Image 1 (cartoon, rainbow, N blue to C red):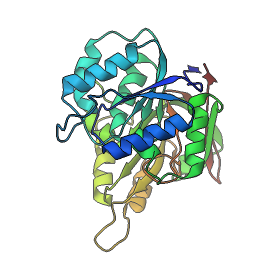
Image 2 (tube, rainbow, N blue to C red):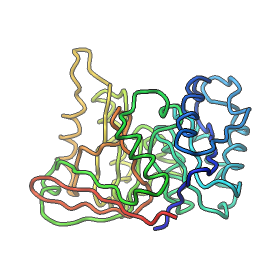
Image 3 (cartoon, rainbow, N blue to C red):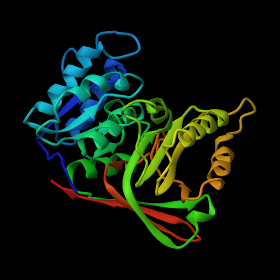
Image 4 (cartoon, rainbow, N blue to C red):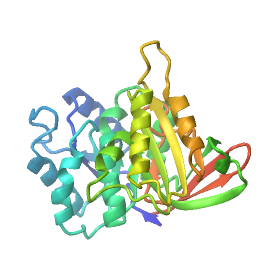
Length: 306
């Protein structure tokens, strides 16, 4: 699979399909991209104080579509997650598939766009830090270095160890499939829409932030009852941060472990992607492979930069 990448001096289109960030966070993130040798292009009307979203739906959609049409950029970088991407999908679906493939970068609420672009356009996308995250100071240097290497094409392979959560994940063998997923809450919100995740034949990765144990279980149960997990090759859990119980403990780990035991396909945890400070990038829409064994598994995705 050939994946678009950006070279030093290239334009990167900055978009805000969901919520806004502060002007200071935007400037700090843009400065990081400039420091990496890129020319970030952020429209003056990116934010207009529309409350829960960065700007009216029509304005956010127009900015996103313009970025996909422009011929002088190959990477589109989202300002932040929050909320709003799902509201753009009906009108985005009515438009034609852009002629030139581009790489969309972002995570959290941007999951709605990842799922849509992966499944309806057949393009890979990068689940990774937003522009606001880049200059926040919270991400580890290792995460930033890895992200820069992926975007510039210096890295064309991502691999990480995983720990097994059920008997199917401990049986020595290999499973492969298209890597899909992202934020669990956003994936749940797509259930019942034309843009719901199609799990059959896929390796499904999920992560979340601020969700307590019962909420995680409710989301997983809904995915199961809605048939999203039917035909899934493997389910991989990334970072689940925050969401502690009133007594300070995190019940999600136990919830996920019990849910995994009920499934017949491999379920693993420990993928370093999500809302944590050490979050790494994941290329969604790529073909991935998991080597399984009693001591754990290893997820690998490889592609051709270009």
